[in-house]
View 1 (cartoon, rainbow, N blue to C red):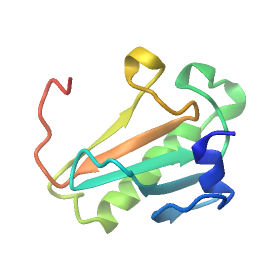
View 2 (view 1 turned 90 degrees about the horizontal axis):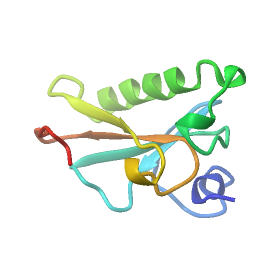
View 3 (view 1 turned 180 degrees about the horizontal axis):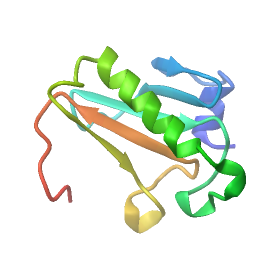
View 4 (view 1 turned 90 degrees about the vertical axis):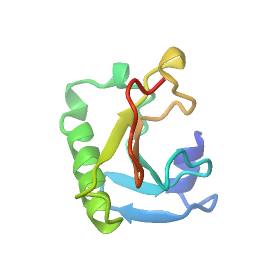
Length: 112
């Protein structure tokens, strides 16, 4: 069971800022920006590579949640970044599909 599954099951605490039937969002414990929210699928898909036809619409729901959270965090007008990491070289450290919503400061390019 991943840490995200434990958060979804309320087995460990998290600063939850959004939840619906398919996603849960909470503040990152090691924020990389003034606003850093993790948006995780409630479906335990390990990586983007593991998505299949039965997961249709899952990432779209996560992005829609990010948009709603950006509005509630007042970063929608100034701008924000949504990041999906995939596998070790892509920076993924939890094997449960999720994205990061980052904002509240100018984002630089390239990111790293």
